[in-house]
Amino acid sequence: MSFYSDPKLLVPAHHPLAKKKSLQHEDFEDQIFITNATRTMDSREYELFFKHGETLPKRILCAGHTDVAVNLVREKTGVSILNRWIMECYAPQRKVVQKRLSQKGIFIKWYAVTRKIHRHLRRFFCF
Image 1 (cartoon, helix red, strand yellow):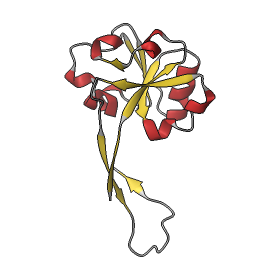
Image 2 (cartoon, rainbow, N blue to C red):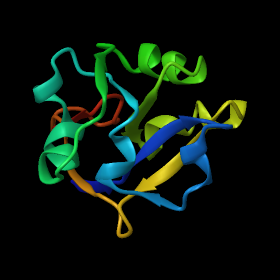
Image 3 (cartoon, one colour):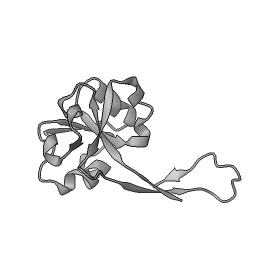
């Protein structure tokens, strides 16, 4: 089974980038970017978005965990990129908003794998 997700920029609700419809690489050059990865160049955001642009964020913080990245954004420490389906549980709190990356958006194809011996799907693995 496979499905697509579209990562979004996560920004504090009153951040200047929250007013833009979509964001480009150059919008990040004066931003502190928070990744949930533990190493900067290993992040999915770097591979899908920053690697193809001419500019990088002013500073990159490696939060190492999604909850930490979201809390840092809520506290106005910086901005982050996360999958929209992950953010659905955080966005209703109205302290953060999601914005599209580039005019067309960016999409990740995920593959879900289950074990055949399980009759009821309780867990699945994505890669």
